Image: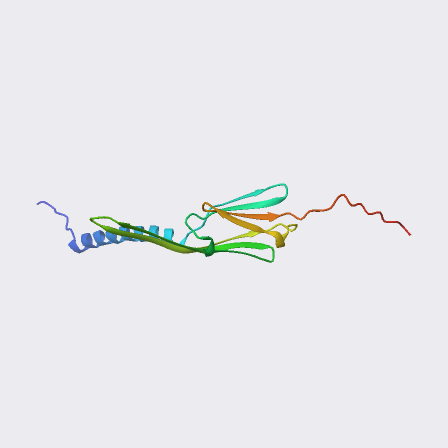
Length: 145
C-alpha cells in the first residue's frame, strides 16, 4: 500500500495570502519611511570665531524652514512638500512626497545668541553661531587695601 501525504488546500492558500500581504507591507513601510521620516543631513564645524551648521535641504523653500533658539537649544524645523509631475503623450505621472522635520542642537555656553545668522544657497542652509569674544587686551589692576 502506497502512503500519500494529505495536503490541505486551505493551508496552502493561507500561506500564499500571507506571502502576498508580507510583500505589500514591505512596500508600504518603505514608502512611509520616505514620506514621514525625513531627516536632513547636517554637518557641523568649529571655526576660529564661530560655529557653523550646514543643513542639506534640497528642494525646500526657505519660507518653509524655521530656526529658533530657546534656553541655549538651537532648533531647525520645517516641512517638505515635493511634487513631480510628468505629462507625456501616452501617460501622465504625478509623484509627491511630504513630511515635517526637526533637528535640535545644544549650543555651547559662550556664544553670541543675538548675532546668529542664517543663509540658504543651492539647497544648503548655513547657520553661523558667533563665539563671544573675551577681551584679553584690557588688563585691569586691582590694588589691595
